[in-house]
Amino acid sequence: MSSYITYEMFGAVGNGVADDLPAIVAAHAEANRLHLPVKAKPGAAYYLSPKGLTATVQTSVDWTGAKFIIDDVDCECITAPIFRVASAQQPLPLDVVTMHDGQIQLNNPHGCDLFVIVKNERHMDYIRKGLNQDNGHPRTDVFVLGADGRLSSPLSFDFDEITSICAYPIDAERITLTGGEFTTIANQAESKYNYHSRNIHITRSNVEVGGITHFVTGEKDHGAPYIGFVQLENCARVTVRDCTFTAHRIYDTIGSAGLPVPMGSYDIRADRTADITFARCAQTTDIHDSRYWGLISTNFCRDLIFEDCCFSRFDAHMGVSNCTLRRCRLGWQCLNAIGNGSFLIEDTEAYGDAFVNLREDYGCTWRGDVTIRNCTWLPRSQRRAVFSGHNGGTHDFGYTCHMPNVTIDGLTVQEQQTDAAPLYIFNDYLGHETADCPHKPIPPDWVKVRRIHTLRPVALCEEPALMPDTKYTAE
Image (cartoon, rainbow, N blue to C red; front, side, top):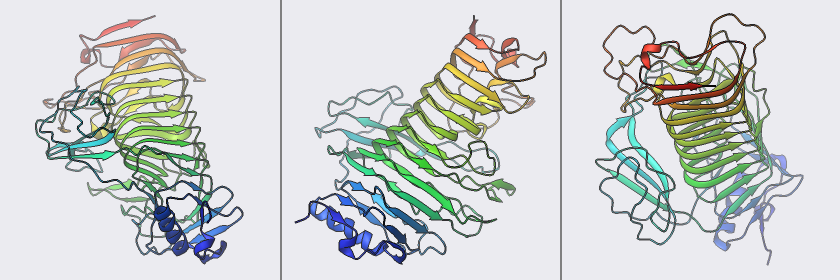
């Protein structure tokens, strides 16, 4: 009996023409049944047709040396992933009525580590403002709950009521997805928010993805956006290392406000995840080419780490709790974030109108501390603020908005020409709003600055009256 399963055992041809998707689906089903790994044939080119089939992956896979051609023209089902990495375990019950901001302990009767998603459907957060405005999303937080009852990091919100709580056991066995070159033949669908997700969809915790390359071909002057080729959802303790991705062309559509908007289209997506690491990952497209959308989007995540990555942007969309960027390069769409907790940006080079763009459509909020250490900023415009955002205080985002406490210990601003205008830590945050500001953001408690290398004088804020009680120290 073989110690592993191959696609050829189930009829795969691997010539780049014959449809190998049914054989791949069958091979993984048998591998799951026998609890055996799967190996692709080096040199094979597996053609994956537009059929709405998904291979469920519950064992390790070695795709090294093989190619996969994913035909997304005229898909039967645009939301059917090619591979879904799933746990065989079922969610476990947790008897929890309320939780509170900062909580670090919770009774765990199951004796194993759990990935937990807690929601209050009766409270809406992230009530988006702008061209893609919406009515918000249920209050959500995620965390790893240890067998000892400790949370991976403190809870970020109050839950006066919990309408649902899901506790997923974290598999003790780590599975790996290794190697392989994947090429997506891009869809030719109408340019509207109809996200395609023929991808690798990971919903299992304790997974490592290594050495995968993804290309995109066949893009034309229109197309629907992509949710992400590697999509992480409802999982924890996942590492993505030494992978290469491809950014997607930008197409325009009509947003919810009835006006034209560029559609976000991603090659990496993370939703409701915790303890996720991306290491030594890059993209095939130029990080400064504005024809291509930023590579990554994250929502409702906790404890993200990016090390030695080169992407066109980083984006914490609907909030991250605790994030580290270390030795990264970020391109034309720069560094975008809202969230809570600690945000460390270290030995990182970023382009953009600001070094950190606090997302205006979600209130420019960071409730916690941001540390910038030994970084380089290459400004794209004449606007000069390390942190950029605008929150006039007139929109209810579902939560109180905060400006971050800031520590800067080493920031080099590379600009060829300068004028007499200062370099501000914060821009004109409130703008020129004249209406009452019932939702005015809370200013930082402190800002500490040392070793900023710039040709300009440095000042706290374009709008000093915004921060009358902020303790500002500069060296």
